[in-house]
Length: 181
Image (cartoon, rainbow, N blue to C red; front, side, top):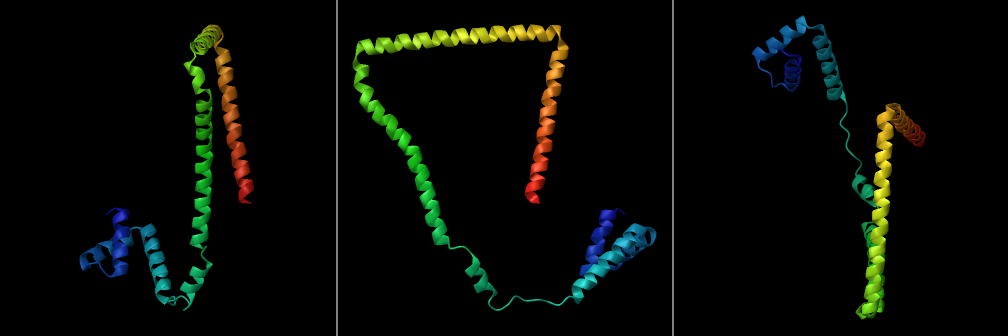
């Protein structure tokens, strides 16, 4: 039999739910397996300790004292409502400000000259972003060629990143240990 099955039989035997055939199988295994026999002795000793332990009941006023020690839910509710109200207000104020700005400068969008100047500024910004993206891609291509010629650079960079992560983990372990102490 498997040790897990024997362990289950041991638990059933303690509960008095084991038949005679299973009891004999368990005892036969225990006579052959010293580790299971030691486990059975230990389990029986613990079971006897539990049976001999006095039954304790809580004090008569335990419930009232415990409930009196709990925080007042009404005060906690008021605090939560205040915090959530603050967050709601903090989220609505920027929206109100954007709406007020929109109302203030809304009439300017009816002027064709203003719209034309915005379109020109947007076009110039798009040209600038395109030039920056092109330069960045060209720089990445140059860096890729450098890595192709000198693969040791990539290896060195990976080692440096690994060392940074390793020491970051060591630092977090050290600081978490200090917080526990």
